[in-house]
Image 1 (cartoon, rainbow, N blue to C red):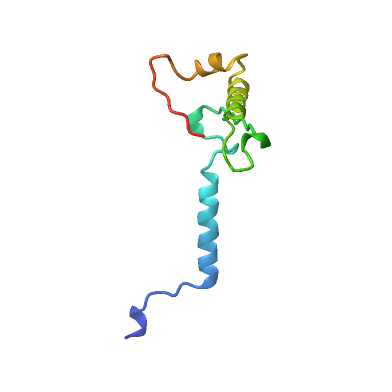
Image 2: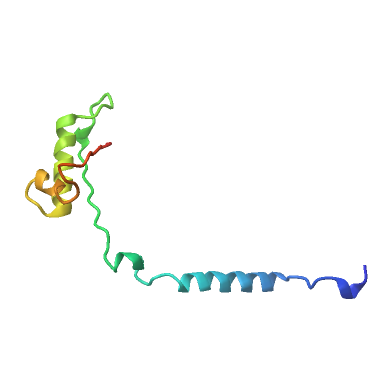
Length: 101
């Protein structure tokens, strides 16, 4: 093959430069705060509810403890005083709801 028809070689230096610039370009396109722009700048609220008593020694869920954890999580999330009022923030009586723990 004649020397002038070969494609130029990509050196390691060129590869690293292109990769670094590409990654930098992608990073500059992200919002600074890590909050998606579609959410209007609001942060998501996360509630973590844990109790060791929620599971029995046999690995079964304890319904009363699970119920209290769910109630605590809902009231903490919404700021309501009762779990029933907290649920009304998300669903209406006409909705069908399934809960998986």
